[in-house]
Each structure stands twice: as C-alpha cells, then as structure tokens.
Length: 422
Image 1 (cartoon, rainbow, N blue to C red):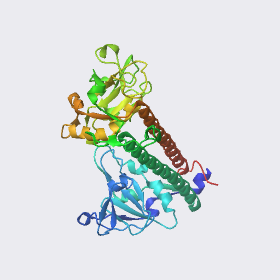
Image 2: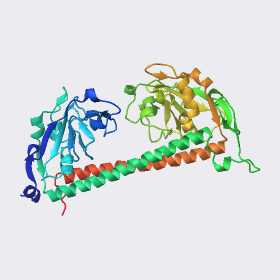
Image 3: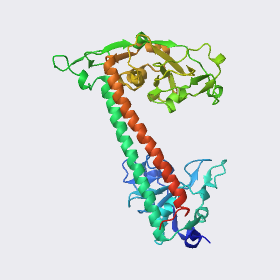
C-alpha cells in the first residue's frame, strides 16, 4: 500500500462540513445595502458582478465555502465555489450552499477540493438544469491528507493565486496607461517632446477645427480623400476551411474577438479558400486597413486592423468588412492600426452608425469621417510608443497564462497526493 493510501483518509463531505442553504433576499436588494449578496452570478464571475442587500438572511463567516447548486445544462457555474475572505459582509442567496468546515480540517484546502469537483459535475446530464440536493452535496467522497499537509497544500496554492492576482493587477494598470496614452497622443492633447516645439523653441499651439482643438501643425483629411475602398468577399465561416490552401480570408468576427490593432497574415488568417473562389476580389497588401462594418456593440463599430506584413499568399477581406488602402501615402506604417482607437474618430463612427440591435457603417458614411493627421515622422514615433506598450502587455499576458497553467498542474498533483510535502 502506498504512503498516500496510508496517510490520506477517505471521508464524505458530511464528515467535514456543516451545511446550510441560502435564503431569499429579493425584497431586500438595494444598491445602498450593507451586505454583498452572494448568488450564482457573483460566484461564476469571481465576484465581479455584485448585488447588495439591506438585510442579511444568511450571513457567512470568514473561511466559509459558498457553492452554486443550480445551473443550466453544461453550465460553468454548477459547483463553483467562493471562499469567504471576511466576516459580516456576505449574505447567501437561495440555491447557494453555505458550508462551514469543521475545525479538524483546513478550510482553504477543502475549498480547493470542492471547487468544480468532478463528483458534482457528474450530475449534469447536458439536457436539463442541474439542481444539486443537500444529500448529494454531503455524499461527495474526498481523500484528505493530514492537517499539516492540508495547510501546506493550501498555502502553496494560495501563493500561486496571489502571484496570478498580482500579474492581473499589473496588466490592468499597464492597460490603463496604454489607453491614456492613446487618448492623449492620438488626439494631440499630449505632444512628444521632439514635436512639441517650434524651431525658435516656443511651444506649438492648437487650432480650432471641425473636431475641436487640434495641434496647429496637424492636418484634417476626409477619410475618402486618403483611402480608397477595394473589393471584398462575403464568405461565411462555413465556407472557410482550416486546411491550408492557395488563398485565405479574414472574417469580421475575428476582428471583433481575436485581433486588436493589426494583423500579420503570415501567422493568422480566419480560414482558407481556393484560388478560383477569390479571383474577383482584391488581394490584401501591407498597410491596408480592414474594417468591420457591423457590430452588435456600439463600442465595436468600425473596429479596424492594419496589415503590417506583405502576405505570402493571396489573402482577401471577407464578410462584413471594408478593405481600405492608403492612396496618397499619408500614413506611416503602424499608425493606421490606431484609427479605430482614436476618440476623435470613434465619436464620429457612433454618430453615423445605423441600426438598432446590430450597428453598421456604409461606405458612403466614410465620406463624412474626418481624420486629424500629424506628420509621418510624428505618426511613426507615436506608433512606436504605443506598440511598445502593447508588446509589454502581450508579454505579461503570456506570463499570466503560464502561471495559470502551472497552478492547474499544481492542483492536479497536490490535491491527489501525486506530489507530497515533506
């Protein structure tokens, strides 16, 4: 018999916790409430979606475990748990179980054993709503190490959580800095030092324009005076294949969900098509702008990406997109990437968009869009700064993904006893 089998005892959850059901709070919900109401939405969103109650009908204590008991078929909330981090603040709603861990067990360790435990997930048949009953919850089988090892495992996983949380906060801080720079640099509110002064050393001023005050040395151009529109395809997702072919396509859905600012078509395309399918459509070139012409969200209207590479194969712009090409070389490579991030342009897009549930822009709309353009040298400098911030955030995101993967591996090994603490 292995050391794990000797030292880790088999129990049911009934031996480990005291169970209580959450209570109804609907009539007490108020944005002025003193108590955070824990419901399935709160737990499934890691506490980012909150409601408050003026009354605590089922107050949780620090180190209690709160578990979602009901969810739709194949839902991601069933049996998801929340570990109470402070007393006298969280009150528990209906269809949430309140579990108080007995003193002979480590509460944080038990929380990690229960959170989305495979035993609970087995009650989801993928057809009807899952509703865990009290007996089903308390019958959950567990294999538990000695208390000292529970403490060490919980601490190791808590340390991993804290590292992940610190990375997430750092990423959010970097994003805020980047967004602030975009607003200021793309509108001219903030000038880079090398472009902020005249030859005699005096500071450059601002001038009134149709877009409000802009730097005195920036020029206004209508979108259609500097861009021409080229032909695009209308392939649906189903018409694109993952199998490599002679030509490829960029789908508007990927502009909304997978791509930001720019694209390298030699490393990403939405899918492939054959040569004879794209004979009548323009081939994408370096510096082209691909614009999504439709969005379910007004904030996503006119989102665009710049092609930063020269494609190795013919790539076409696809369904619900416009393909725009700089016809007078008004832009430095990379600066077009930030057209749909510029508040001066976003405001115009929102004003000119049509639709109720789905918002759209037409090609004729763009004849009314005005661009405020700095010199190409200033564009290049602005682009370099913004891309440096974007790359820093991408590096941190990769670091975060790695940290999360490591934590999953730690849980798989530590919570099963595959790796032991001395």
